[in-house]
Image (cartoon, rainbow, N blue to C red):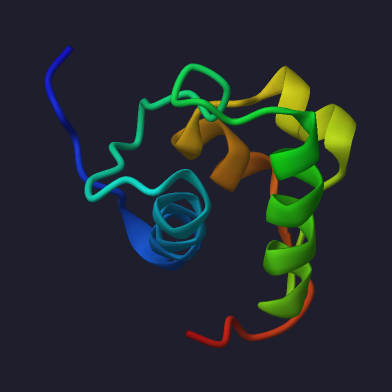
Length: 83
């Protein structure tokens, strides 16, 4: 598909974490965490990194909405996002 860059602060924050964890340069909003090489161990790290930024999602959410844009929509902001 066509690459669409992340939109909005939550998608941007998630993309930054994904790039770091997955060792990728570019993350699109329709990219799937698991298709990019994410696995359950990385998922735990991802959720922990999200929590550190005030973003809350659980493992079930990640598995049911593994694309960046869907995960961002399902993510609850606990507080102001710290970038």
